[in-house]
Length: 481
Ligand code: BG6
Image (cartoon, rainbow, N blue to C red; front, side, top):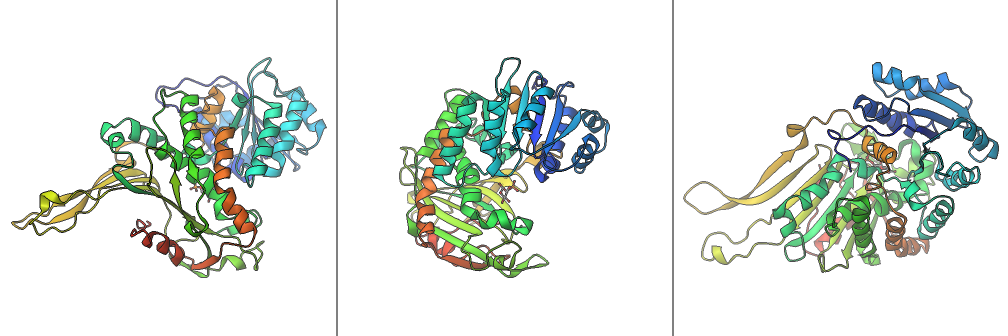
């Protein structure tokens, strides 16, 4: 993890983007590279070489990548260093042509459909493009990394047959978010927090990633994927790992990755009755009418793909013995809200015996990942007046009040880290496989036709069964939004 204020300029490299005309490259990668240039973190000799199936030339790619960047001197400088190579990702001749154009260090960014990941790695390896003789050679693999445990293992085996683990950067873009990186500082940089961060004091944890967006134009991908595969073993488990991991013995990448891998390996697969599946029906989000998921384009109207999933998990470590972790994520919900809520146990009532107070509000720490990034802590305060009465109040920290966040895509740190070879924010093979292993029994049960999908109106907080999941334990979800 890097602190921009102190960071050094990354060494020069050719950034090869497979799928350079695509949405990811245009919306996120190009603006992130320009932002890094603006911060003086990219060497002027760095070039971008885009590869795509489509017809085009350097000018066409420059035009495509200009779509989401501010047209200033930095962009004009980056623009001159962009070139295009047309070709099929499976064609060995393309990789020979690529080889002729690369000298020194290179990053191969696979911003393609996932079915190309393995083949591209094999072709890169076969052409000698991953040999690190005259500079580093690194490969960045986007999500989704497999669709279940066997396919993730297969993809890892394919990649590791071509490159060393130190050359492979598996992206989880949630780790590019400042607030997610801040979890490590909030936990280990504050004595008060870490002292109470265990089963003795924590009652339960909730991790929520609620979205208002529908599947939109992604019907084909999403219908084959569903909310669980799309969000849980990757994004939500990464958040869980940050919250639950033991303190690393140093701030080095491998020390942090070891602790995260241990935590993910300790996640117990949820029991079938602890998993809720939902799918949005027609409804209204804000001012907008939204039609049902089954009426979306490229979706099987009779299928059983879930657009919402909630689950209760436990983590088999001494620190978290008996503490439930409730996870939920869904599309077309009432509000956009990614947050982690750590609810502490009720305080003992002894001191208040004989007073009018019969229950104290529990302390609650809310880490708001997005929107309105920040942290709030709720505690009990006395209501002014002669009668002793208690009310929960919150201490709030908003990033925007203290820091200039600027317009960032969330990919800046991730890209910079690839260029400097820091793998802290990237997933290692063992983390990915342990994550899939934890959800594999659920996927298999669903594959056998188990797991009823309950409809929820678009614009709501999700299916009723998700509320029941917590109500069973005498708990409630934190309000979304
Ligand atoms: C992606 C999922 O990985 O993450 C999308 O494929 C989801 O379905 C997105 O919308 C959420 O990311 P963010 O950064 O918008 O919260």
